[in-house]
Image (cartoon, rainbow, N blue to C red; front, side, top):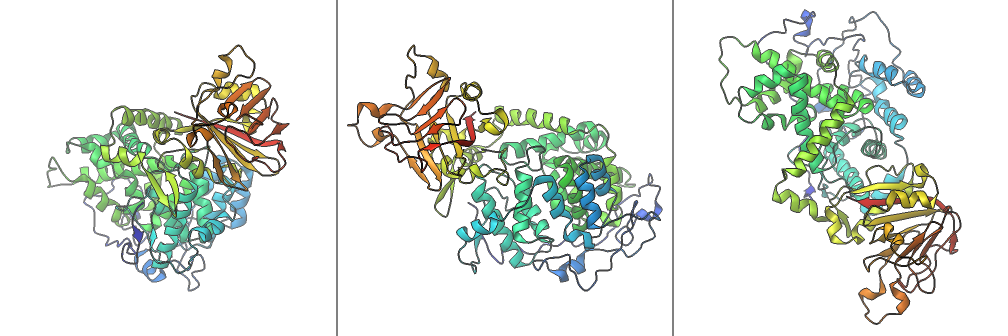
Length: 588
C-alpha cells in the first residue's frame, strides 16, 4: 500500500508552456501557419471556437479554473474550414447508436473541440456509457463503506499507482483527494490489478468533466473491457509494453529508432517513458484530444501518438545545423522537453495526422508483440527480486486482504455481479496460489448449462474455483483442491477424491468460509473426508449426512445441505436451487 495522499504530496502540476523555438522547421508541412501553433492552431476539418466563457459549465467544481486559464492556450480563430460539422450531443449519440466503428472513428478524429467546448461536458461519459456500459451506482455504496468519515484528509493511494508519475493536471486539492477515493474503490473491487500507473492520470482527466460516480464507472468500464486493451494491469504486462513500443518503433518509426540507437547505449531506457510522453509531458489540450480517440480505439492510439512523437522529434533534431550530435545525448529529457514545448511548432492536428498516418499498425500486431514480450519478461526474470517479492505479497485495505496477483480479468460487474466480493475468495486461497494467474475456464452464460461441458472445460486443471449464483440471487461456491479428471480414476460410480484444502463458501447474502473439519480436529467422522465426487449426471462437493453443493446434469435441480466434511450451513435458504450462472476458474 502506498502512502496517503496529503495536501502537499501532490501539487497542482500544470503544463507551463513557454513556447521556446525548437531548432529546425517542418519543411515538409504544407501549412506555413502550423509553426507557432501555440498562438494559432491548425484546425484541420473543424474550426476551433472558444473564448473561455464566464460560465465554465463544462468543468466540475474539482477544477482550478484560474490555473487552467493561465496555462491553456486557446484559439478564437474560426476560419479554418468552411465545412460545418454537427457537434451536438445528439449527433454524437446518433453515431454511437449506429454502431459503425468507421463512422465513430471519423466523428472523433476529425473534430478538434477545445477543452471548454460544450460537448465536453458529456463527451467522454457518453463514449464510456455506449461503448463500455459504464453505468451504475455501486461506487456510492462502496465509498461510504470505505470512507464513513466524509472529512478524511489523508487517503492511501493503491499499490498499483507509481508515485513518480502523478499528474493531477488542473484539479484542486479536493479533486486530488476525490481521485484517491475513486482509486481506493477500484482497488477494493479489483484485486487482480497489480500495476496500472496511468489510471491515476485518466482519473484526474475524467474528473475535470464528470462527477466521482461517473468517473469510477468510466474507469471500471475501461479496465474490464473484454474486447479491447486499454491499460496494462500487471507489472509483467507493463514492462512488456515498453518492449512492444521498442519493437513498433523499430518497424514503424525506423528513422527515429536508428537516430536514438546511434547516440545511446541503452535505447530501452529512452523508450521506458513512452506512455508518459503523453500523460505527463504533452500539454493538457493535446492530452484531452488524444483521450477522445483513446476511449474508442484503445491502447493502439497511445502507441500511435508515441510513435508520432518519436518521428517528429527525430525530424526536428535531424535538422539541427551547426551542432554535432554527441553519443550519449540525454534523449529521455530531450523528448520530454520536446513534448512540453510542442505547441510552439506542432499542432495537435499535425501530431494526430502523423499518428494516424502510420500504415500497417494493427491491433493484432500489438497483441502478438505483447504476448511475445510478456513471455520474454517472465522467462528472463526481468523483474527484480524486489518486484517479485512484492507481486507475491498481499495488501490490506481496511482489514480486507487483497492479492497482488492478476485474476478475473474478463468479467464486468455491471453486467454480472457474481464476482462482487471475489477478493474475499482470493484471501481464502492457499498461499502458493498467490503467484498463479487465474483464468476463466467455463461460464454457463457462454458455454451452456451442460455438466458434461463444464467437466470438459475444467478437468485439465489441478485446482479450480466454482462460483454459483442462484435464480434468487444467492452467491456461493467452492475451492476444489484436485482435478476433476480424478473422478474417472475409480471403477466405482461417484467415488470421492480431493484433499483437505478444499473448502466451500458463501458470498451473498452471508460471507462465510467453511473449511474441512479435519484442519482443527483430528478426531473426525469417517464421513468427514468426502471432498469431491462426480459423474456425467452429478457433481458433488462435500459429503457425509448431506452434500454442501450438488449440481445436476443441467444445472437446474440442484441442492445444498449441511455436510460432515465442512460442517457448513446450507449455502442457500431453501436448500433446493436452480443455477442462474455458474463460473469456474483455473490457475496457470
